[in-house]
Image (cartoon, rainbow, N blue to C red):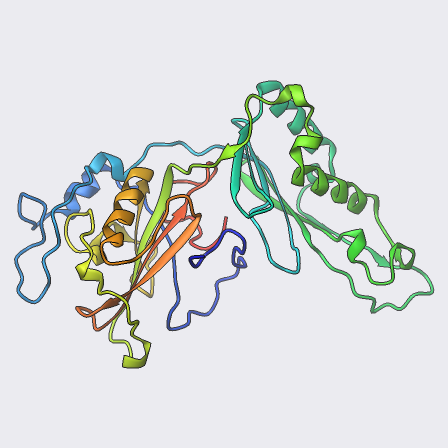
Length: 336
């Protein structure tokens, strides 16, 4: 599986960047920005004539498809569980009724609630400890038991309320060392244990008549596409794969000049742009000509290229934008 598998989203803290680090990012480009980015280029969209820089093929992506207009939905609830400390996408419910979850094979499936089904789920969330705001619920050792008993926090929940994102964590009873008798377990922890189980199996939780359709593979329609360069790399760090400039990228100009840099600056010079599914399909087709693989049905994909022009390495990444995420580079490049 490509790097950035949906089975193992990275932690929210920013990791130290190794020599082969991969970063994803995005930015909505209005048509004016796209046109401005073409300033100084020949009218046909090819790269300016410069014998020191390989020519890029003509663009086949019209500007309109590089800035999909899909207003983000609001996240009603997300629940995910740390199983052996491997975090998964979990289950997500959005205020348009869309439900996303990963099946037993790690594939993301989608189903939509009927309006009354969405109202039913929202009522269950409002009745739960999640309505109390950000918190961390855990057990404490019972009288007569060692104070250093091990506990674990595998259940996490995220809700959006009044424009803010609220995170709630809770220990789980089966993970408590010594068993339940060794702990004083708060009612909130028991309630969230049940809510986590319910969200992991929404078919058994939501009454059958409250669904609008059946489960189907999720097809993302917005993506972050990023290009991260690393210039002047030590020879031992250069990959043996194809050179990035040999790929017939479906963009105007050179691949390391697409989109824009991150707001506030980026120490690695990562470029980012928001694209639609059709663009990712064209990128994948271009990469296939040099033996590289990419699929818009994978949530995270990063391909590593040799980059002779920069005497280094170039990473080209795509990442799903989920319905609640804005179409810009402010979105986290490594987690939802």
